[in-house]
Length: 132
Image (cartoon, rainbow, N blue to C red; front, side, top):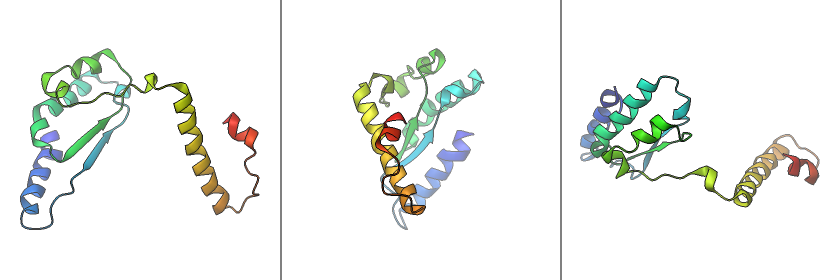
């Protein structure tokens, strides 16, 4: 299925791009919460397929989020994936950086809400923001 859904259309677009506009240099496909897939066989199929076609994906990049479940971690040990992936363990990011990032995100989103709904300039109160 990966070949029909991604590889073949990408190769067709790549061939067409030589005569028309070039493909973008960066295209991302996000697979979020792979660990929440309850079918271990499906998870294995996804990782095996990624490993099989990894050389044919350029310029695609995959962002896969997951808890470090054993079957998923083991899947990334396949040579093709191991050589072509970068892991970022979010649980190892220092808490002060995480808090700062979450605070910046909330402040930005709440500022947009304040503008859209014409709320009081003091909304939300500093204490309320800290509690979030």
